[in-house]
Image (tube, rainbow, N blue to C red; front, side, top):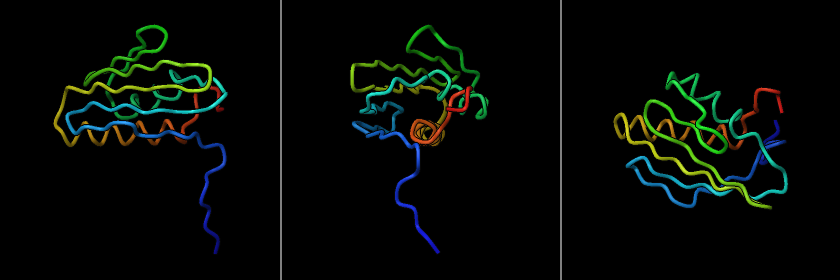
Length: 109
């Protein structure tokens, strides 16, 4: 039996702030630029939240909005989830965090 402590290809995502009210801020250090549209749209579609890209760095869905800003060596992702119950917002935030760490974009990278 083997235990893998680090997933190959996983991105480092640190939760800077998380509130049960549906607001969260994540920080992702790294030198690569990621296609956050492709990475974060897929789980929102699977959850049936009707996501729509709002231009570069933003996605709107039926229960809120996701906004990210990229710097030279980092990305900050902010969640503003104001629709649905507290439990639903927490579950959606957990699914998006997992997708941000391990998910692939539409091209498979």
